[in-house]
Image (tube, rainbow, N blue to C red):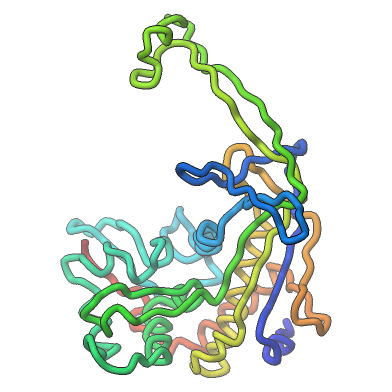
Length: 315
């Protein structure tokens, strides 16, 4: 697998045209008190946010985890992470699955809080210059996923809460030229269909309950942006840079190659994948090729990982 073309460009930009697996309608992400995120583009097109950047970050992390084995998927085994267990030794969560990674309260506020380790490793109290390269080396040691998806260590005792790095990989899905497919239905109560007339429907769920439903049609595109310049800026060396490049490729390929159904009525498949940058003929490698390359790349960086690679804390 040749990724040399990534070393001379600042971004890897990938777009994927998608469509509903069946039919033409799909259900977008929704937000409290807002509903579907519809908007107009600069050229006046009706647009829709299908999947947000924060949700896609979670999905790009999920493809790395084997829930049955409670471990990294096979090609990624050997990467560092922080695991959280309860007092009985049962698995609770870990830094791969937690929304804020190492900044999870389960990691920083436990019985043996990981925040003490971070204080010692980073060596910065409330005042003093923040060394982001040192932060990057600590993240590489304990949780490589934080280098990819960013972190904000919101603890005042660690550099006054100034330890943060942005996402190195960002993704979102949007649809253009969208139209609303309005429909509805009824939740039927075959025992006492008229009880809803007494005003108890919303509280107790009795009675026939009619509802409306909005789905959408449109041209769906997934966007992926890997900040290669940021990865190089960590200053962690060529071997680590190559590992992080290929880890980003693994995340993107795994998400696109596997079934993608973020919601009940949003079952999508990929029609076409295009590498927008670099404009030097680079093509997204096949998933099996990426998987084959990862074990040796991980092995070449093990001297920079914690020993053992899984750091366990109790909550």
